[in-house]
Image 1 (cartoon, one colour):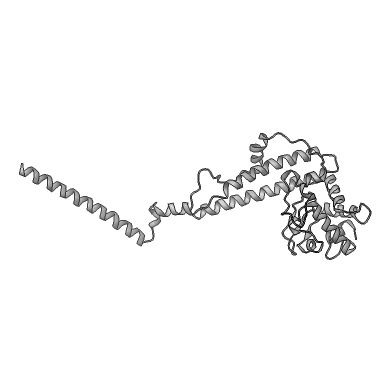
Image 2: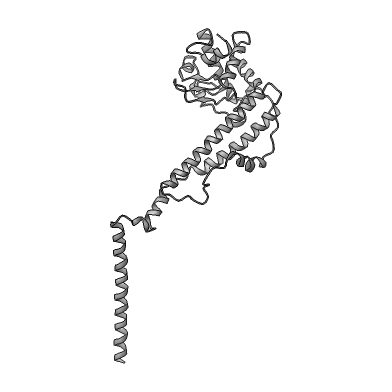
Length: 290
């Protein structure tokens, strides 16, 4: 009996020594890998940290916005087909072009952002698409879910712009709902009348031509960021904020069609003509308008 106990104790000691040697070997190996700069081969905290540091919050809103944009494009295309052979045909085609260009830019931005995060070493979550849907696929996925919209009837501009009765100097920034972002020619004429443009030679007929040159799509949210004078805004593509300030209008409402056209009327009256420096030089020259 004593001999058996001694044998069992000896085996236990050998086991403990063996386990201790293995633990020491693993510890020394990790220290050695860290010292030689290859610690990245150990898939532990480094990988977890890079995953946690990546911010994917942009992905879902971006995908949702592109889906909504695809549906809007389908609606614009339906409106363009319905406008074939009418005075609004070119306007509706231009509106489709604007929306398609915006979708393609959003697609490029999304893909670039995903690529940058992955190349930085982060893992992409399973529910984040690796790439945005190309527009044709986005149309197929989203537009078949929505009934083709009926051609939008021209509405009184007060319905298109519910804030018209408000004090423009006190209201918040004006942003149209997607349905009323783009105007028809009839709505443009109604907006000009509400802004006070005289419908006589030298006034609205000429300004109408200039607007169709400056903003062919009749996009109330048109914004030319490349303009060197602080950007050009709205239907009349007014430069910077100073025209609005000089006309006594609120720059925050620069995209409101009434405010934009009313500021354009002030500029035309103050200058006495359309063309030349400080006016609508290029479009006035194109149409031969002074």
